Image 1 (spheres, rainbow, N blue to C red):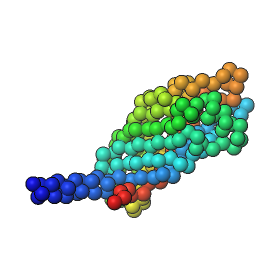
Image 2 (cartoon, one colour):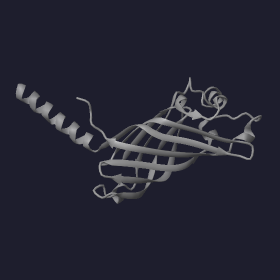
Image 3 (tube, one colour):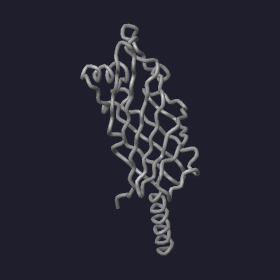
Image 4 (cartoon, rainbow, N blue to C red):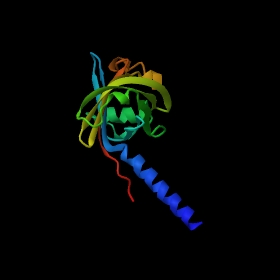
Length: 187
C-alpha cells in the first residue's frame, strides 16, 4: 500500500512539474483604455494585471482589479469606480480564452508572431465572447503578448448618463501587454 501511495505522489509531482514548465506568468501586466472625443480624451492605465499563458494548450487568462486603473485626474478615477464600473459591486474584470493559432508560433525561435485570440471577457459582471488579433514575441525564456481591440461600454451594462455622454467615445480602445516569465510553482 505504501508503494502505491509513493508512486502516486511521484506521478503527481512529475505531472505538476511538466504542466508548470509550459506555463508563463505575470503580476505586472499592462492594460489601458482610451476614449477620444472632440470634448475630452479619457485614458486609464493599470500595471497590476495578473495573467497566465500555457504555451502547450494556448490557454490564456488574466484578472485585473478595477480600482487599480489610474487616471490623470482624481475626479475621473472616482467617477470611473463609483458611477460607471461600480467597483465595490464588480471589483475585477477578467478574460479566459485561447491563442487560436498557437501551432504557427515556433517556440524554439526568437521572433514576433501574429496570433488570434478568442475567449470570454467579463467586465461589470457581464461576460461576452470576443475575438482579437495580436502578437506573441518569443525572446529566450520570456514571452510577451500584446493586443489592441475595442470595447463598447454599453455591451457590458455600463451606463453613461446623457449629461456627460458627449465626453465618451462609443467604443474604448483597449491595449493589453503582458510580459511573461516562466512560472515556477512555490514548493
